[in-house]
Image (cartoon, rainbow over all chains, first blue to last red; front, top):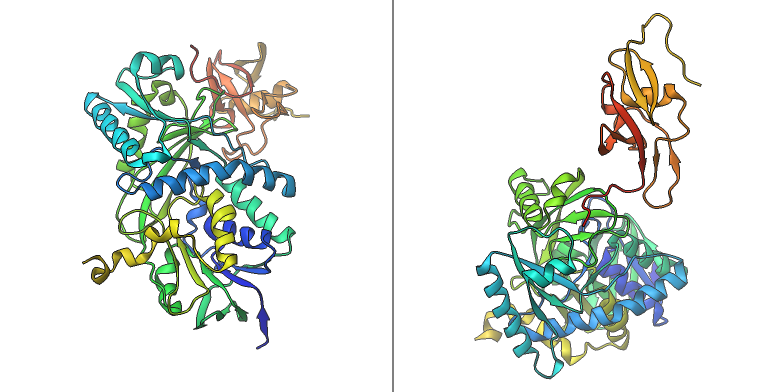
Length: 373
Length: 98
């Protein structure tokens, strides 16, 4: 078998892998993107589409900073992808709100946001708790159960499928090699010298990036890395298109550029089970209708479930292998939100051969009992 | 373009964009739209393109119409009933008016 040689191998053709592969190619590296195929769990086909900052990183301000940095990189990413591919990703970052149902939720949210701001320190964290009366002026047809909301200027949303498509197109247009039906079945590692077998071909490179979502758990040990990720199921409901009503996204509800209302944000620990559950769908719909009673008049036209890629503490994992320098992992459940950071911040670090110290807290070493004790 | 089968009596009168048309019992609202010779039954939410019923089996959503005042109904899945008013669906449904 002939060796196919590249500057970097990226394993995983979802949002994380495609953003990094595009970012590497954009840095002038010749990258190959290995995509397992439609037998994979394909979290990037089930995304909700928020570019979301305000709920991220309580007790972990480095995650808040990384998420903010990504939201800040997003306009540049969207503009560059539009310029290179003609793709309209529908990015809008008008700020966003988290609705509270009942006084207890409002108080809890207020205390959470105050802690986030305290933890942010000099990085700052702009937010407001907005009472029901003012919120009614901002959002149409709010239900009486809504007691208020937290607002930050950082939040937004985009079309996740168009983002995925645009990243792939930009990558290929810049000379990147996309290989479908290429599950990695074997790997060989030495410092700055890696080889993988995938789809009956053999690829070699001085860098490898594991971005295979839930597949990373099994792949990482081959390269002296650890990626203890588990599936967490989320379900999404989608309505027919409606005339534009929501001027900004809500944590659990957003109106797409085309007018559909999407509802979601359920979390279930059910292993590798992609079925949908009526009780969960009912609860998503119930909260949506409490928030905006008019949503109850719309027809649902689609619903699906997908598996989030979750680390034990819910934060991303980024690492370079100590044993085999040149091998990296990237794991997260926010492939849309973090796309800006992955393409424009993480990929240059990988190209340069070292992760920025700002990413040190994201190492999987944080789960190592010996390191923690 | 579309015509009634001669052996089936057209006994149910409905209104397509206000114009009366008679269809056989059991026919769908979408069949009435086609029989009426309407130029379009909806205009799409994004580009405003005119559409007529197409798949006639609930899959394509090109027959969306306002039926008896209810927006975005799939006309091919709604049986015609006497006096039913089938009107053009113009763009996206309005879910809430302030």
